[in-house]
Image (cartoon, rainbow, N blue to C red; front, side, top):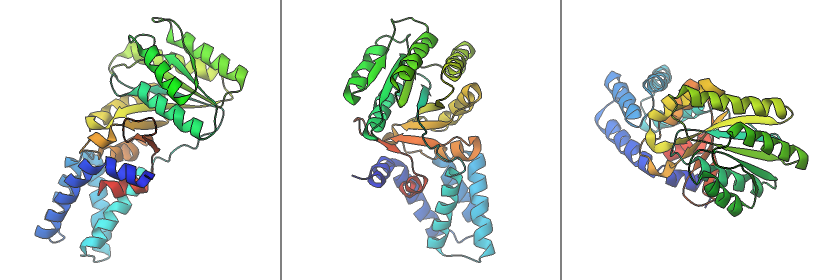
Length: 298
């Protein structure tokens, strides 16, 4: 199954909801103010942020009026193009090696599982990978990461439970530098985005990597549960302020009927989605593609 099928299938709940509402809208409304008001409501109901929804619909309206367009197919294609442009406002970073990726996020979003899948992705790209178990607080977090590291056939650097996470990061960086490893993936403890002391801890780990491994390309990825909808946007805002995010990994994309918040992440925060989780297996992770996401959305 190709990436298009996987992402399209994962977005089935969102697509079924949006497509049905769009069909009903075209049946009952000619293009006019009432049509555009309801189109905006449909986007918001799919968890596209209000500001983004207003901006998208305004662009659709201006283009349609300017070209005197009343055809349903043209308007739908126009909407898709504008939504795709919105996603592309935040271009996906191109990986340069050696690289370090630190994964952050709240509790329960699937960071550790995601790291296992990302490790597997890079192994399939013929890259050497090490994972760092810097979640030293959650019971069995290291053991869980060890299981995923074994599945992906990659090395793991770990300390005892309760150790200083920054010390784990320091040792992991020293190890990958000595071995010439291509990719270092850092697991961190889940933390509420409202806890200032925990956010400062992330900043400390950030500084360790920057100081000890300046020659590496350093990315900070936020792991988001797609089923949380607009709450994901507020999480991303706070984490972005704390560590200056380079990208987002979406988990549980196959479980949401409200995937529209992704447009707000890219359009308003200018933070790109890099990977999308489309299932529970180690291979169920895809590089994000704006065009294919929009096609899956409808």
